[in-house]
Image 1 (spheres, rainbow over the protein chains, first blue to last red):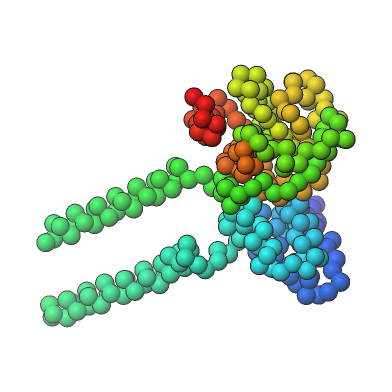
Image 2: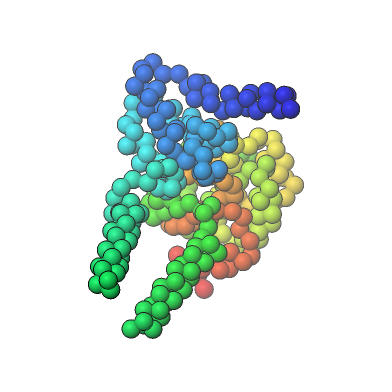
Length: 129
Length: 179
């Protein structure tokens, strides 16, 4: 049992420290890079971020982002580069705009409708009394 | 009144189930759409596999409808696709270019020597940079490129007889006007 735990912790530690391989002169660049790799999807493993994934394509994308951050490109332009090539799906958190309006507001709309029904049934229950 | 309410509920539920069923059966979560479709092939410049003095660039793809195939010898599906690509070259006389993606040149040369070379030129993308620029996330991938050098369609996965006849060839026929 123990060797398994040791092995697992070794595996986890390599995954967590993957981003330490990328060195920046400025902390702002480091923060930018960390933010980007945490919010970009590893497209071949779908529900992992680039920071979490050991897939070869994730590594290539990390390298690409590192290069772009080092070139002082903004977060927006890097995200635009990625979505143009891999689609909006590559962003782990969908941006708020016309296409995703319904996605973001649906819970609120559903809640309002539910309250409407609740209110209506309360009223009719009162009338019956 | 009660009856119409019940009917309405049943219809709504059925519609919901229909929607969920459709999403479950027909959605293809592995397929990513590329915004590059409809725009020009990004600039690239790669040495040819057979003759590194010669370079494959996006300019080579212009002038007629061509296929750009991204492949590697380590890719299983590329193996099954290769015979189909040979057929496209020999029967359909289509100009096919390729990018050999993150591969060893020796293995790639061996592969073409053994199984035939369906490609006019093969750019070596050893680091995978051009692959990222094209939005490649799995091999094989094939782009249909029109005479102006715009990406018209991206096919992810191996080309086989079925998707060739159902999807790819009709697009090419439409572009070239051949029947």
